[in-house]
Length: 349
Image (cartoon, rainbow, N blue to C red; front, top):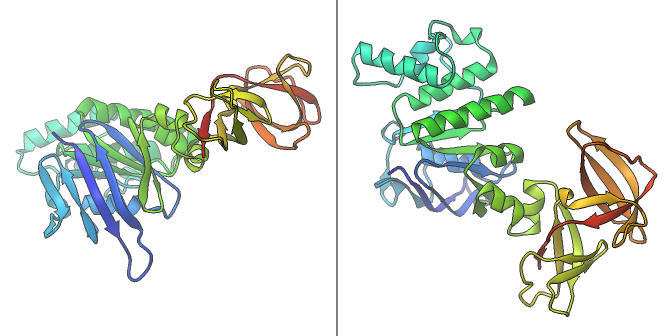
């Protein structure tokens, strides 16, 4: 089994503050985990330690039943059976596509090497491209070749270091989907390092949010979005409406907010005041006189085609809330509107 275990990983550069602080991460065999975090949080340092390019100050890295790094152990990168897809492909410019893919294949006869190469090129949607040179490919095609090269030796783990950064948004979504499909077809365990929240949520089986050198929360994309561990994570992984709230004493599990009473997803557990979390899609624009709605004034509208984000200042409070509107948009800045809440909220102390 190719399960990845990272335990207590710590790393400092010189006399500075630690970049990693006892970071822990487990990636089940065959899963694609996204390591998500802002610049400088330590995610790239973690990847380089797992790959063997850096030595950790403390902690262990295990892959299946093998210890790659730990007390007195540091396997060199070439012995770790790890494939790497770097940023912008990093293909060898003087080698053809086929020779790039076959570069890491050792111990196979010529016919077997080319059979494996053709198999991988077909897997990534580039059958018939073997004789082309890297400069003849688009950015997306180069990333597919880089993935094929990483998968060719049948590694136990594939590391993807922000591989879609150089692609435009439309191409990025297409290549992301192809990469995920190829990884699932081969059953490879994989770790994707990214700072793009949408990329992490739409691509991975698990998302580990890194903050201050440690994993602040690791969960499925759905659980992370719906049940973030704290307001910072809620705001980092997606658009969030964060409001001060006070829990009612009636035992009904509701919180009083500027948007009125809001039902809570879980019992408050003794918490009487805190931050109420809603997502913009949980808010609805209504008629001003709609029962149970609060009044507000539209201050901004951002239209995206498939939906729009409407900012409304709540009457009497001035607190702006973001409301995601799908379909036809019937409000403009300066107009009054009603707001109502749909569904349950989270509460953080």
